[in-house]
Image 1 (cartoon, rainbow, N blue to C red):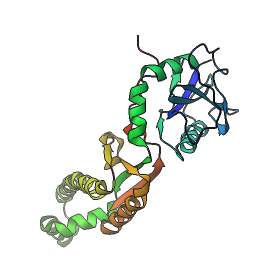
Image 2: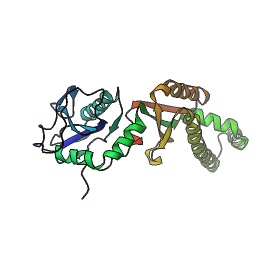
Image 3: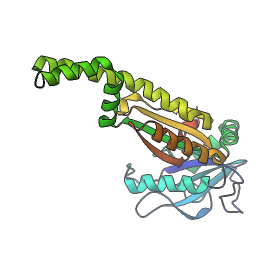
Image 4: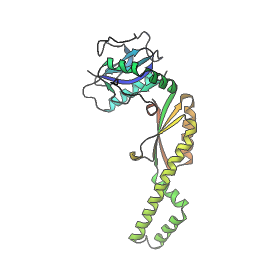
Length: 266
């Protein structure tokens, strides 16, 4: 049975129980290479108990992997809950949902092989969390704003109104002009959100534009600065009512780690 990996933490780690024995090779496969983590239920139905595999100064939170692993809602939530609980009192390098290794020994091999990299990333992300902000336009509000700021568009609208709505060609020309103006506004609004929120954060990572959002931004925030970041979001909402800001967080810092390969090289 494969090993499912939730994340990597430093060892010792304040969210993990004391007395977890070091595993420096010579394990006996899945299920025998670590202590169960009290209170942590993992993925699967019924939930697989989460256990710890540890080598030296690093530990991995793992469980047995179900044979029918799919991104079901209950498993996505379970994955997130394990990381959130581990991250409440110390840094955690979160693995993406679906991260697998052949067995516990493969996990131990990676912990040994990439020990320096993981230790550096854990130091860099200590007391940091991620907030994801997805931005879209409030269509009615942005249309009103575009017309208010563009005399040419207002004139076209007035001409059409005087002509009883305008001809089909006039309506088409107006629609194309409005659409082009709104598209141009999208880029400037996305940049404005970035610049407005960045001062309260330590790093920003932009997601792909093909998602349908105006902007999909992930911010690395120190826990002590979270109130300031959320205040900046609230101020942005008040100042830019044509923007719809959807905020998720605090989250494990998925966008700011490079956990590397699950299996050892070579």
